[in-house]
Each structure stands twice: as C-alpha cells, then as structure tokens.
Length: 260
Image 1 (tube, rainbow, N blue to C red):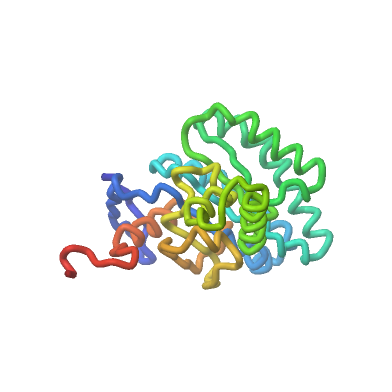
Image 2 (cartoon, helix red, strand yellow; image 1 turned 45 degrees about the vertical axis):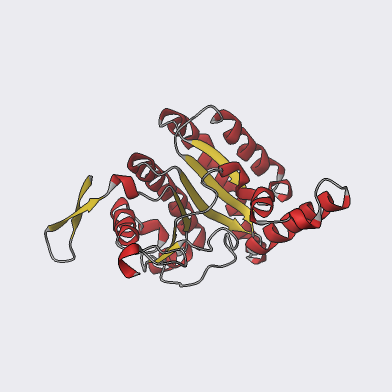
C-alpha cells in the first residue's frame, strides 16, 4: 500500500492509500492547458508550453516511483501544425532542449524513452534529438516514457490498415486471418507490448474529449478529466486520479461475480 498525504482546500491534509497491486500499468495523459496557464499570467503562450515541458519531468518521476510501466504523453498532434508558425517552431524546439537536459536524469532513474508518431515529418534537428534520446536510454529497463509526437489516432489507424492490406496483397496473410491481434501488431503501440493499451487516460484543463488520441487502444480505458491546467498538474493530482481509477468497477463489458 502506498500512503500519501494530500493537501485539502481548507488547511490540513487527508490521507490517500493506493493499492500498489492496482496501479495502472499504462497511463496516458493529454497534456492540455498550457496556453490558458500562460494567459492567466499575462504571458505568451510559449511560456506555458515551456512550463508544461518542465512539468513532464516531475510527473515522469512520480509515475515511475509508483510503479507505472508506461507513461504516454500526448506532446504534439498531427493537427497541431495548424497553429501559428511561431508557436509550432517553439514546440519543435522544445524536445531538443528537454532531452538535452533530462536524458541523464532519465538514465539515472532507469527510464526508457519511446516515441510514436510520424517522426520522419519532424524538422531534422528535432528528429535527431528524438532519435538520440531513444538510443541513449535504450538499455534502461524501468518505466517507458512514451511520447506521442506528430501523432493522430485516425492517421495511425489508416497506416495500420495500409500495412495489413499490403500484407494481404503480398500473400503474407489472408483476409480471413485479420483479427484484433493482427491489428494490434500493426499499431504504433506494438513497441509497448504487453502494455499496448492504457488502463487510465487523464486529460487536464477541464476539456472532456479525446482529441484523436489512441482511438483503437482506449476501447476499455478509464477516463479521468481534471480542471487542473497541465503546468499546474502535480504528483498530488496524479495520486488523486489513480485513486479514482482504483475506486472504479472495471467490467470490460461483463459483470463482476457479485453482480451476477
């Protein structure tokens, strides 16, 4: 049992006990609210993105400490290219600075970097930084910090279908062979096996939508929406959200014995 003392809104603390045997093995987070965080402080949007990336370090270490096996962070979507050029340029520069500073600490904490998405479409320097981080942490055997970078759920499904169609065309498999296992193996999360599908999906900032994130993989994920903006999201928030996850009755379309 993990014991945490969480601050209450009134002065004081409350105790939260997490069952260490029920910590979600794969947590995925839609990191939302950087721009609003900056706006509230009369700062440019890029200041929110910078602070949000700093917060990745804190949440990564907290998740690793609690025994999470995979932490997937939605860092940049295939739709984010529509944002102002200056903001996109800043976002493309962030991974370079982030990995340069944080990789030694990740190695120290035995955390491996994985990146999913259309990496070949990133600027060369960003792509190099990503590939270097993956290579430098390749021997780490602890938690996987998985970035969804230039990623979109629909695009991923289209790519997977194309791969499967190519296999059928080349006679590697028959149409009758196509099942969930074949589709799983064609998805970008195949590298995370056996933790392909997140058990818990968290979205910060109060928005309650999926935004084209892991559409295949979250079929039975528990969803938690929090009003906290990503740069303010803390270890305490993570503990609260995992506690909410552990309090739910996960039936996967069936019934628990006591409900039969």
